[in-house]
Length: 334
Image (cartoon, rainbow, N blue to C red):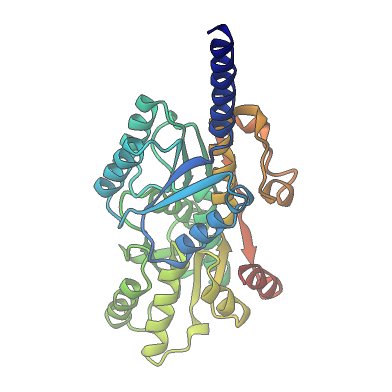
């Protein structure tokens, strides 16, 4: 009886040890809540997530949710991620205010929540991996206004109302316009095209008819909308190079047009934002035993510091796209 008891104890210990090893080896389950999946930039983020070394090696698994540009949908998806016992949430939020609920729910459930790309009006997230959208809006507007010699009329094509990119890039746009001096730049129109090339095209067509010969510059708060404006200008039989046009993101079609001298763009690094967020998310689950696996920390060495994976904000630098560096940036996308 004693022998059997001893054997039972040994078997139980081995079983417990095996279970512990299995639990330790279990991949980190990460829910990624994207605000929408239509635009190339967001698709680049998803592609970069799947290419993260931890994901490719099976150390983390991803569930990507399409928020369909609806904050309520995103909040519901966060509830689903929590209910299905994901270890961490990464959110690219639709709305600066409404999606704060995601962070509140995650904190209540004890799940790390990392914000990337767009921002939320809260300091309660585990961390955020973003770029400075005020600076991005400033840089794109500055490029347009420099080409116009700080004189003339512009139109501003805005992002979706309520998203941090629209709010903060708009602040950067206004800062650049103010630097031209009072009365030197007139904003003829400003309206959202919801990050959409398809929506920006008819918007620009209407403005070209309404303000015939008066529009000198187009400040589009992302590249997709700048590309829609360019299609409208070409469709109207006008010379696109007679307009100063800029966007933000550095999507592939924009890089090609920068090379041709038809627009300017500021590249927002989708890969760095997403892979940085994944590194932070895994570290938040596993602790200091996890060290960052993405090479983005080396890529931006001196500008982006790991800080033990515990910083509240990681800022990914912008890259101004030029005809000289466009090919190199395009090659990275392949």
